[in-house]
Length: 484
Image 1: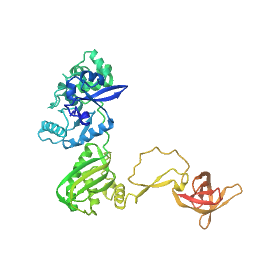
Image 2: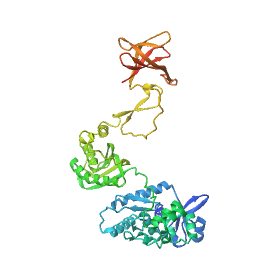
Image 3: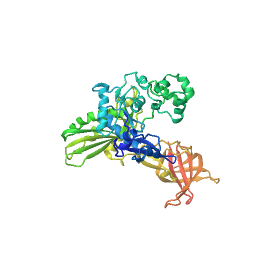
């Protein structure tokens, strides 16, 4: 489906206005979109603003604002068409591809075409649409051929053949080369041998040739960026007060949300349930998975646990369900004898449930942080906080597996050369078999607690390995940690 006036309609212009959309390029103001009325009077995309106004003096101009805003608006419009199919994606700056494969169609493909056009026009947009085997071929027909039609299966090449070569959107340089060779129609390009096209016109020419033959191009357009959230909503036929009734209404909502996530090849790690209440402020709650999920049964089970202790202040009139944190679905399948599938709750789900029950700040995982003092070189972070993976740090000196919160006083006996002979941590002195060090750590001179220490790893005769240090200011020894 193509929305030829979308870029101007989003600025408030109608198709009957004499308006062009302008963009600054290399010290020139170029026309990038025009209304049908302006096009009928001679204005064309690619002209400079002065050339267009020379043909149509009454033509008004609108400068392009942030392209990211345009893309976001088109992506938002695509969400409205998910009622026709869960798989909808933008193409370019003014078109949508609605995947009908596997979707039950009322009235067949012709009925879906009529419904898509009706929906677009009800939203205030001029639209033309084609049902075809391949979306880019359908877009070419929308722009240059007979629109609002259903192309029979296998008939796309025949439908594209009479179109001008511009329908395949060649680059200016390739268009010029094709014109010099007399290739002005799509059918002429389709009749050539693929190998000769690749040799003469390279990768771009081969993509155009593949499309001209009615097949998907070798390098399909990149999918849109991941949506920040995927949503589903339902208005309740009558106000609901009980949790059981809410869960009954949530079941089909979870099915819809799971289908949309599956269509976008996404999964969610965090759900937000938003309840509109009768004569009361709305109520929102968040529930987390230990790892991203999209199965409707998993979504419903998570919400059931969160709703078990909920008491509504007033009856609910509508339910919104949002997948707030979405990620690409890994598609990993568990083995038949995977112990996680036999019984017990996976660790990730357990931690997510504890976080929901106790609060975000009550369940933590240890993480490293940059600090010269070993006792301050770690911090507590929420389990649901997933930082981007970073390359592993370069190998450094060994660190103990157990670091005591407070260093413990230690009595050390040395020989005249300074070698450590024995240590006394609690009661009896223990002979030191080997000592590695010193490793000097110092810092914090700018803080109230500066430190200057020489660390040693000592292997004791009783099998223990301790991490000890000498305070270079006082000369005292302390044990700071141990290896298992």
